[in-house]
Image 1: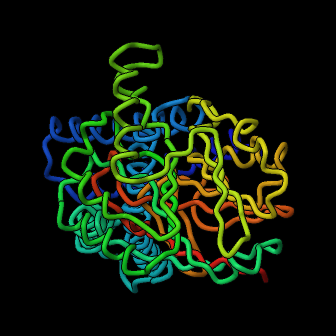
Image 2: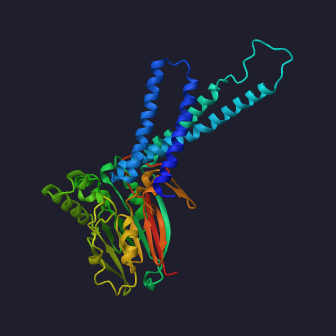
Image 3: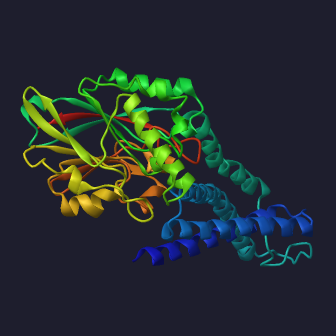
Length: 417
């Protein structure tokens, strides 16, 4: 079944679920005045229909990622609340069914005028429905808690990266990755500094930063430049640009002097912090006389995202390098271009998705609404002889928190086998 038919089927099921919940709530609050019932119905169905429309627009139109994230998180959070409510409604309906069957089967010895007529609707249990509404508020509570605690709850992900052609001198070397700082969203200096200290405490030999230093403006780094200037490693820190670093969402896609100046300032910030920003180019990383290649391109993304990256320039004069590691912000680039045209790339490192800052992630299982937009959205992926790692981000955008998909610091151990 294609994506559109699947979504239409899910939409029909969700609208049926909405109607079931709506009727349950209306039946409990019988004392509401007609005007109150009308207002409630208007709010309920307006929200439902607008949110459903928003989901279709978010999936089939090139909306900003932050807007799509807000829409999809709201949609799945709403569904979660109603799914939690459903068992209470089903239990109450089963109770009513049992009572109704009992009344039908029971044959009184004498007719009793006061007895209710067979088939007369049995009132819902107000207790069960109201209890369900209270429990359904849990997902909303968790989202609020994600703002309070999830935004800066940095987690270290340890990954053993197998590279068969890795030179012996690099076997066991440690590499760190952070991505999507989005400094314009931060509001807690101490917490941000704590995350940097966690990264440095791992003592990586070299570090990758895979784009989106800011939301829009270079000035957003003013209060955080000193913190991230401490991110250093013996073999260097290598960085790339993300879609937000160009100022497109603030200045527009067209050229302008202000936009060019802003990008120049972003680039200068990388330089001031001591990070080696790769703009469609490569570096030779040498250890004990042996070398691997580190390639970095400007942003290249599918759909509405900018395609500034030039792989042809980045791979130039790298044929002799036994291993090539690529920094490319948007993971859609891997499937769209790298796998098809550049089989010499051993591993690509990305960010961009944030894991939508909402979902479930354990060692054995991960799920997020973002997987309906990006096939590769978090963790390590393999295809043929190539690998991709997607970091879910250090910062946040749009929703000022994280639920389940926590900010990530990745530590790789490079191994020959």
